[in-house]
Image (cartoon, rainbow, N blue to C red):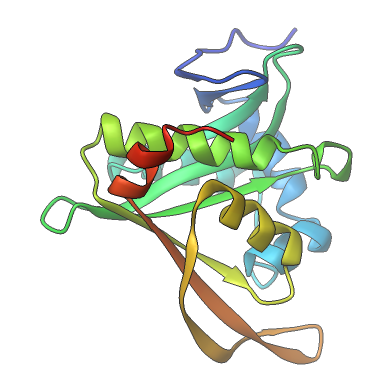
Length: 186
């Protein structure tokens, strides 16, 4: 019953696919789960099926590259990755991702998706640097980003409020040269 997927960027266990209409339903479900949104910093937003569909369309209009993270074996969507706020002048962009359900976390899918997105950003979009934001309590995500080659570039102290506490927001980045040296080996 699932719509046929476009396999845009193919890895070993996953591929990245442009989002389809069905995906906005799954996204809305994930983005109303505090377990997920507390880590993304969007627990204060109202997300509906309609707003998610609009978000998908807006991103394409804005020139962002937003993809579903799809399990190769089952064609099931397990998360999202985006390359956004692209600057052609500075050749830089923001990158962000999440893995939706707990069952798919801690399996290295996030790292694989991030490697694929970085390679795409550097090889196809001719970007030079990518950066991301992560909250200090999100140790699993930080470990994942470091595995791919991101380094801490700085932190905004107590810049994020969640569940009665303030948390540091960490900025991490990676440069194109770093990826070439590594040839994306694990």
